[in-house]
Length: 373
Image (cartoon, rainbow, N blue to C red; front, side):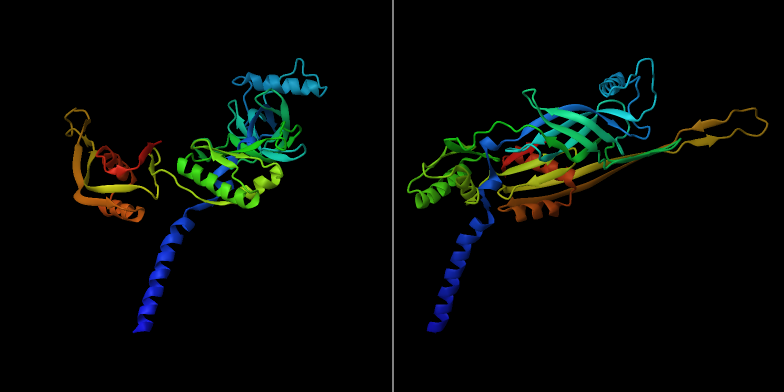
């Protein structure tokens, strides 16, 4: 009997420990995954260039005169005179070249670039981007791009039909840009570190500050972090600490994250994303649709022989109306699994679920933010 009660007490303690650990384990993330360093922001680059080597799918010089002007200017810079000559070959396309310069990028490293057609080119497949300078918002050149464009879409065309899959007027040049100038950075001279949360939340910001302060007390003897608002956490640099090593230690600390309950709906694609914290109060839902089908089957009426009549067309329209649904279901979503099961039991498609969620929100039973895209 004592052995039986001892097993029961052991099971109770184990259950209590699992309930305390499981939720924290399921919602924990490293600081580097939920926040970014303010001094380590990305920078956007842009440029204008030409893609050559296309198989007759480039810009037409009449519809895109800037392509011909750019080509003549490029040839003149190469020492080739183009005065008095005209070309109708559609093997050149004008493109906008964009790229993202990562933080702390050094000269000589490579980044990917994206090319997008500016004129009436039908495809950039098989083309090569000619040397193009990429500038930042300050007008300075930070990278130079060149290389073969990779286009995932394709197009096949005949005299009476055309098949197109994907986008053929945009592509990428993997590793096509070489960084020529580094961004001015004074990371080592900074007095403090500013962490910016990718998903602003007061609870998460406070937890980050608490975790960092716990680490700092054990390492440096005092707190160094303070949550400024729901997005920024300021960390002061201890005098004896190396800033790079301090950031490396802080970004690997594990924090329990928290986000507000949201339901994101995209009515164009029928996409529904429901957060794990979404709750629905008990509510009764009835959903029904009315489908009307109109079919036109005209009949040809021939005149009687030797009647000198005319052939006539007699219209005939068939209309069918069908009403589906109409069941009333009670939805009570204390957790995500119950909510999804309740919506699936109604037997409606995503467009119907979107309408139901909007109705539940209007009724005040959806305890979450409804985001429409």
